[in-house]
Image (cartoon, rainbow, N blue to C red; front, side):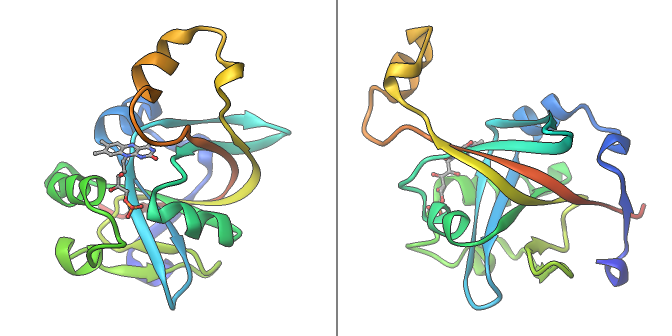
Amino acid sequence: MKNLNYTQIEPAEIKDNLIRLIASDWMLVTAGTREKFNTMTANWGGTGYLWNKNVVFVFVRPERYTYGFIESTEGFTLTFFDEKYRTALNLCGAKSGRDCDKVAETGLTPHFTELGYPAFTEARLVLECKKLYAAQLERDHFLDLEPLKSHYNTKGGLHKMYIAEILKVWVRKA
Ligand SMILES: Cc1cc2nc3c(=O)[nH]c(=O)nc-3n(C[C@H](O)[C@H](O)[C@H](O)COP(=O)(O)O)c2cc1C
């Protein structure tokens, strides 16, 4: 990352409003190895502080192709982009890596961090995250049924939540 025009900062130094960043700008969740990896768009999740660590939490439906890569590796990256990459994020959120080559279709350039995590050189912000805890959401655990009804009445499983430690944060130099 150092030779890619990025500077490493502490998680608490991220200047963006993280709710807006995740909810409105969206992110790519990317996991896998140099041999095979996949990426998908996500805008459910957050950041915070847990077990004395800086963490992210993301929610991934088991039917996503990306799910298998997150399950089988120690961590993943969250990458954030300028508005001009919205088309790429739309594609990564509409098509599955099972059916297409997202790298070829978006033109994004993958690279691997020193920790071996996949990211994209076009990202303006990269979070390298190591999984700490995973839990499948369960119907019985909803205290308010509204989200259950509005998001899980159609086909598809409930999301799995991953809490992951933010190991490194990189911002692209201006
Ligand atoms: C704006 C946006 C946000 C999304 N957020 C999530 C999310 O938080 N969790 C999730 O499981 N899927 C989310 N998706 C859906 C996946 O990105 C989509 O199903 C994608 O095609 C999965 O790709 P894959 O099969 O290659 O993993 C989102 C899609 C869009 C467009």
